Amino acid sequence: EESDALQLAFPRKLWMIVENDAFKSVRWSDSGNTVIIDEKLFQKEILDRDGADKVFATHYMKSFIRQLNLYGFSKMHQIAWRPVCRARWFTEERSVCVVSKLHFYYCPYFKRDFPELLLKMKRRVGVTGSS
Image (cartoon, rainbow, N blue to C red):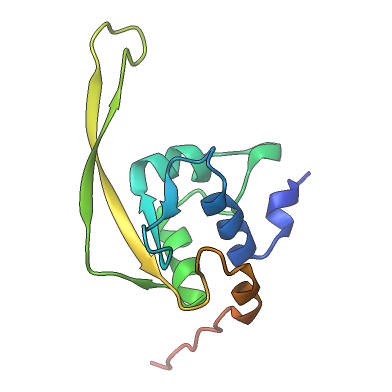
């Protein structure tokens, strides 16, 4: 049985995740015009979910990014790296830090405090070239 989240359109699902403080892997930029995605954490926190907790139909970051592009998101050229530390991972006594890649995406109809703009978002239909 699919979760309720799987029934929502992609932009609405993404909006709900960005707005939910429980998710640490995706957030608004300070201006509210850009979505920032922590790639490693997003994979673990969102894409790896299964069963009733599943949010998106894919488990792959590449497929998720394709959906962003199909809905009009553009990748911003700024890429940042952020150390992510977890105290006592598994049974170790020391903290473990990994570096995670941050992605920045912009869409004119996806802005903090303007959920009504989501109605303007339409999935683009890809055109395949003949070879």
